[in-house]
Image 1 (tube, rainbow, N blue to C red):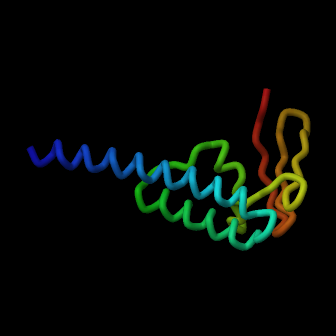
Image 2 (tube, rainbow, N blue to C red):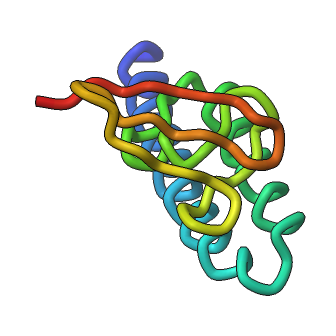
Length: 104
């Protein structure tokens, strides 16, 4: 009986963690225009929640984080996005980090 309760608790924690991560990214998007440092802090908290509960951040949200300096990326203001052959190239203008994602 103990195992079933643990499984239910795990799924509840995963659902709660996913909800919090999505909410933190929404708050980061809202806060970026006035306070980019606060948006970076929200992203940091979301990363820590995902690591603590072993939940992956969804792909569309993960691509809005610089993997070198962990800052929130907003295209046009602190990130440059280019199409290069078969890749989308995202450059962080804060640290110069470059990420390439394939597309068809």
